[in-house]
Each structure stands twice: as structure tokens, then as C-alpha cells.
Amino acid sequence: QMQLVESGGGSVQAGGSLRLSCVASGYTFKNYYMGWFRQAPGQEREGVAAIDSDGRIVYADSVKGRFTISKDNAKNTLYLQMNNLRPADTAMYYCAADYRMPGPWDPWYGYHYWGQGTRVTVSS
Image (cartoon, rainbow, N blue to C red; front, side):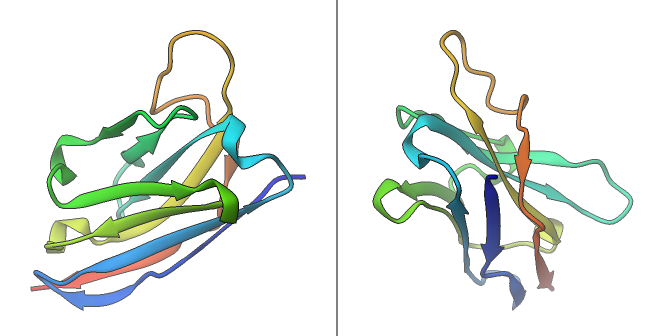
């Protein structure tokens, strides 16, 4: 059974930085595509950043130039480095994963495995 456990959330002031981590267990990390999503109170969940099994990366427009997604296959860990944080980044952040099947990659859909989330609060 695959498990994803996030950590690294917290409270920071605007302009600050946080690094989220997501440790995966129960599967071979390198064969999966993974993503970070967030959900603010009263809003729908949105994709933040995603990385394909071959290393291709996609970002939401709202975080381009500020957030960086990366993964360490040897450690089965996904990261999200968040710089220049804004109050609008306040949300619960989730990591997600799914097995990469052949064919086109949709970075924001098809995730079957989700973590419990880590909260990020950015104050002005």
C-alpha cells in the first residue's frame, strides 16, 4: 500500500520561504509522476507543481519563478521549495502520485495516491 507523508509546513511572513517534503513508501518511486496541490479555505483544490517520471516539470502560473519542485529517487522524497511566499499561498498543501502509464502526460489529473497534507500560512 502506497503512503505519502508530507512535512515542512508552517507559518511565515510574506517574502519568506518554506520547503515541503513528501516521503513515499510502498512503491518504486521512479516509475511514478508526482505533484503538489493546495486547497485554501472555501476554495477548490488546485495544482501547484508536477513532475513526470522522466523529470519533466510543470508549474501553475501563480507560482512560476517562486516555487521549485524536485525529487530524490534514492530517498523516495518529493520536495517543493517555496520562495517569496505571499498571503495568497496560504493553504493546505498535498502531495500526490500515480503510476506513469505510456502515453501523454496530464500533470493535474489521474492521481490515486494522496498525502494527508501540511498547512502553510503566510501573513502580510
